[in-house]
Amino acid sequence: MKKKLLTGFGTAAVVALTPALVFAQGITEANGLVSKVKTLIDQLIPLVIGLALLVFLWGVLQYALSKEDGGKEAAKGYMLWGLIALFVMVSVWGLVNVISDTILGDNIDKTVETPTIPRVPVSS
Image (cartoon, rainbow, N blue to C red; front, side, top):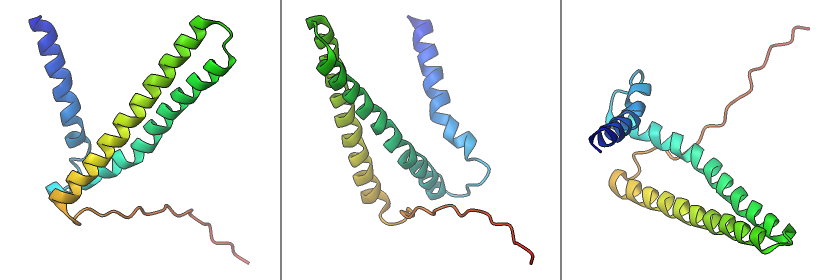
């Protein structure tokens, strides 16, 4: 039991400290770190929500195509867990945005810069 607790604590510590190690090079203040982490999370959340939506839609497809009761029960499980995942992720995302806006106010840059395509000058 003690070994599992220490292993879990070690894993949690590594996960918690990884962003600090990754962003240690270019950040001089705490708001910069928060801003970079928020930007990273904002980019990953639509991907994860899309995956949960795909799990739900997979369950719907399996339910529609299944002819036996066992297949329909498994499909109901996919649909249920897809909906639960969507609800939890959207709720947590909303709470994080409310808390960050409440605590940090407008200090975080909320605009996303679109990358530009490098162009090679053409000589005539």
